Length: 224
Image 1 (cartoon, one colour):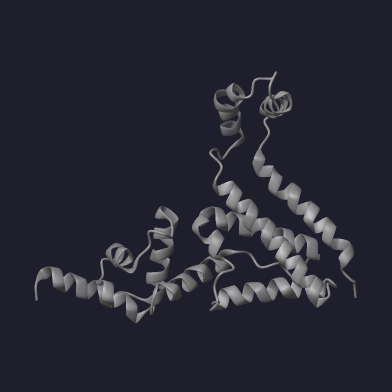
Image 2 (cartoon, rainbow, N blue to C red):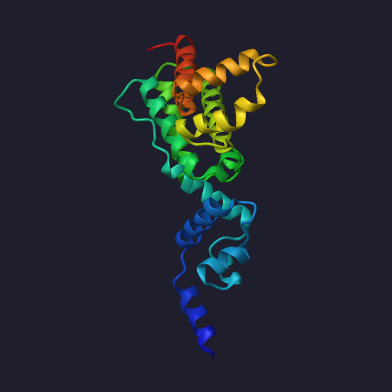
């Protein structure tokens, strides 16, 4: 056996499903999920491509496990507080997790074989809403609405060409305002000028919108 073959055998022996999945998540974080392949993953692990199939049968099973890792990082709604505070903490945590793993946004609801962390998360969210007095159908409505808001915001945020208030102000001055002559776009020009001067931070929009969603859901529950 050559030295190269010996190294590969040793690397294959050190593999585990957890290591394979965690490395896949790291690759997706760096390069996106579209470029993830079993061959690419094997190269990152220094292992033989065929050895990975001992741990995951195919890419779909790998994606299921990767999404389970993401769900496992999201804080469950705490039981010791009111439902709005609990769901707010869960939503804020989900946004932070999806900012670390933007590739996962479009896959969170696509898995037909959810893992244990995925199921625990969904059970905890459903339990929080049911215990707050939302009937089953209204719990479903609330869950859809909250997830749509969180995922939609995370997707929009991931596509922004800036990530701080200073970045927005700089881009407004150098890029946006030159395209918004006041005689042609008076309201857009006004908004851009005022917001940049005020140090407007678009990241604050998340809690603003989330509080509106939670307030709108409050009258729809039937407290026990």
